[in-house]
Length: 426
Length: 115
Image (cartoon, rainbow over all chains, first blue to last red; front, side, top):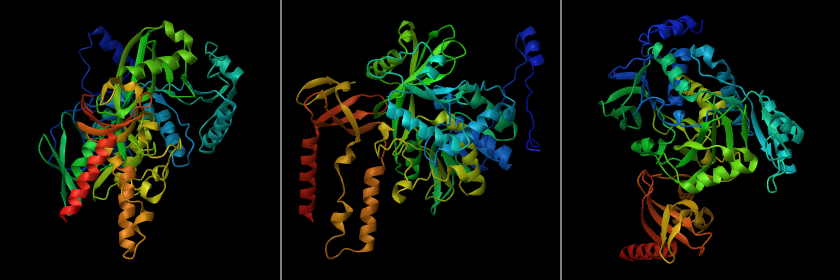
């Protein structure tokens, strides 16, 4: 019985409850997680109440029965990158250190709502990578085979196959004609905020303390061992401290005296005004960075490249806005008639090889999860699962054993694009 | 962002290519250069390897003031050291990388002279 420890603090959601609340003015809804004060000590402290931190807490409690856990969040949970991404999930990687990990993530997405009893609107609407040349088609054959070998699904489409799905694309574009594509039907989108809320509810209901407005200001380190953290709510002791703050990893880990193989960069995202249904899946451009889907509210959700310079600002500059919109116009001319409603930025941990870290540090009892570049959202369940595994057992999970901090010293880099130690190009 | 080029005046940042932290100018001696010589030993080689690893892969990644290298690709092709705030994007200072490198060299030479 996997859920034997589950105690509901509030209620199960049901159709009956929705109707009852609708008729009584929605006055009966209760908060779905508590607002506890921190205890003196925990078995495990997770720094960062984003998607990955909350997922880690949920899996620690539900899979490893470790519930004496606190999640410390500087602001409010779900207020960072888990609320600022373009909600895409996929497992279409190439390298053997990456692909099985992302496929585990996909499998966890597929069972997420049943696991959490929470509607995260997981929608496997298909992710299509466009190809613009014969050599790119060849590369997609290789990538597709790598995906299939890991147990994922992949389907190679010729131009006619793409035309059948999306007849309105600019197939005869002079510079980047569309020659075909690689389709992963199990890929899609998820309601990103609900992921944070669902994991928070799952963790809280098993006894995990989620402590918001609690900023970590330092680590308690003695004789090379981490024994807790300093916060604005006082010192909190812990047997293990787990950093999980992608975007701010360097800021947090510098308090433990560590320099990381990471630069922080800003990535912008965009939403158009609400439109009638036109794009029922996710489409990505193959000759640069551009990806687009349509939200259930009708807005076109899209994004592109980094702004390219180090930044901790959650906003970008206009040249990239122009660049992203130009690419959008190149593959999907109809987008030119839509008005842009909002754009915003999120801060990424860009690592030296474009791949993440889930590892111990040289300080005993201090663990690190970060470096997600701009692929963190899709990884949320597997990142939490593998981090929980590492924290509970002190051994890396089978599919995450490549994500080591020392891989640049040992030569085991995981560079999907073969760009070298230039973080903004991954 | 507008970068105030020391020779060309204010130019739009889109004319430039960004490389990264200006610490990339201070490359440690390559291991091959260092383990040669009579007093070479394993410990020194390991230390040199570590230094080179740190130089290539580790960054301070400051939130706040950040010295960084920009290349004026669509201009005079000079390398600049820009001092910029990574939280507000405000630019404090722009220098030619050549000047910074020469100043560093002079500083190192005078430090060496004191010993």
